[in-house]
Amino acid sequence: MFNKIKKFTTNCRGFTLTELLVVIAIIGLLAGVTTVSMSGAKRQGRDSKRKADLEIVAGALEIYYAQNREYPADSNWSGLSGTLTREGYINAMPEDPSSQSGFAYEYCGALDNGKKFIIYTKLERKDNADFVVTDHCQDPTTGSGVYQIGQDSFYRVVSP
Image (cartoon, rainbow, N blue to C red):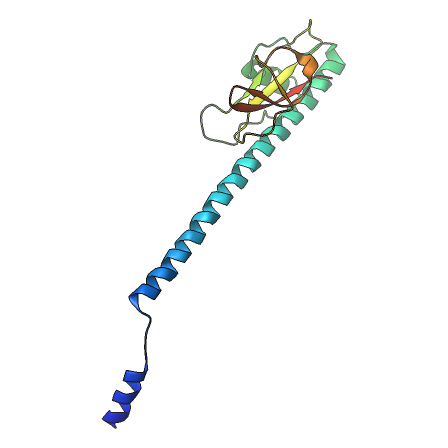
């Protein structure tokens, strides 16, 4: 009886330490690659939300303009937020989806005697810029889209 058990246990082999370490290393590598690719997708998702948020605010600004024949004279996002929510053009102003500092929505104020506006935000991803400007609030004729100042990418919406 004991000979059968002894024979059975000597024929059973487990994994060696080297084999286990190789498997653990492969799993760790796959986890690292997945984490890196997911962080890129998260950045892209936050940038997409930023762009959509600015388009929603631009729509509220167009309604404001249609009723008042000029854009709000506020000089910053906070003032614009108060004007649009208080007067019922938008229920609540969107907030940046990131908790990181340096990412915020901005309003340049009414330009060209109240006939133009520019709203913009910084993007996390370094997208291919549609154009390059030196100041966020200058040259509304270049239009809306992704632009670059230095190494940073931004998205802006300009009134039509």
